[in-house]
Amino acid sequence: MAKVNQNFDNLVPNYLFAEIAKRVNRYVAEHPDNHLIRLGIGDVTLPLAPVVVEAMKKGCDELGCKETFKGYPDYEGYGFLREAISGYYKRFGVTVDPDEIMVNDGAKSDAGNMGDIFSKDNIVLVTDPVYPVYVDANIMSGRKIIYADATPENGFCALPDPSVHADMIYLCSPNNPTGAAYTTEQLKAWVDYANENDAVIFYDAAYEAFITQDDVPRSIFAIEGARTCAIEMCSLSKTAGFTGTRCGYTVIPKELERDGKNIYQLWYRREATKFNGVSYPVQCAAAAVFSELGLQQIKENLSYYQENARVIAQTLDELRIPYTGGINSPYIWLQCPNGMGSWEFFDCLLHEIEVVGTPGEGFGKNGAGWFRLTSFGDKDKTIEAMERLKQMLKK
Ligand SMILES: Cc1ncc(COP(=O)(O)O)c(C=O)c1O
Image (spheres, rainbow, N blue to C red):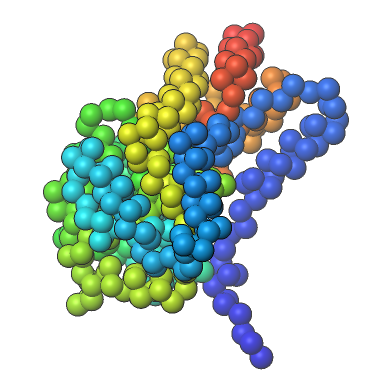
């Protein structure tokens, strides 16, 4: 008999988005003439930048021509894209060699698969609230998981506890769902902890492009000591609207070793075995993102979302509702008003003002009583949603 991976029994069913869909669908069925505004989505809504579309089309044309046709791409991604990414890092003062970059089909794949090259005996540390992929991927592998609490007291930026040992540490900054982002000093504490514990940090920087504050690093490699303990996972999904196009990249410093093994080489071996790369037109499109014109054009979309975030944050300020995020992040994480629970507030928003958000509880125990709004929606609808919220709470 083919036995199955029994660790799957240990997964906690994630009802969050299914339950949201169920409640919203029921509401829509009962109120066909509704004016729902969705501020719960973690997906972008603006189209790809024109220069990116052009590059993708050109890539397709090349595939349609015998002289320029291409077959399987390099496992690590084409040199032209890795050069472009390395140049992007230089803009914020970080040196990453093109040979330390592995191109992939998005950050989720690497966040979920990186565990392949690490022992099942490792102790995994994640923060709570957490992007569920880190937890579920490690439950599937049977690893022990411990939690570092991100709470209002620490500004939702959990810091290491020197009395606790961990081997694999997942950090996400700017954070999904809380929108909180580590300062240089806070991140240095994690880097020092990881080096002292011979641990590896999996640093998810999917939202780095939203950072606006100077003391919040765009990369963990801006921190001294990170090259001997960190792997950085980045994505074009939110930076450049690639959620449907699919492209990301992971940086593994060449000197990173554990257990006498080179981590880049292990990961390369894993990718060469299980992954055949990202399509040529998509890599052309990704490289165009990092061109001068590409960076200018994606900035317009980022500014649009940042303005939405500002509108939400300003409304919460007016209403004196505590929150994090919105400054270096597309997410705003707010305390449910009047002591409401996350689901209670969800139902209240849905039924009273027809606004949909995401209950914080779905991201861990510390999310109870908290709520996530996103800035990825339409500008006018975001303004309208905030007007409705003001009216509801000022009643
Ligand atoms: C923290 C975080 N990491 C990774 C991802 C997935 O990124 P990608 O689309 O590149 O797979 C997301 C998507 O929502 C995310 O929030």
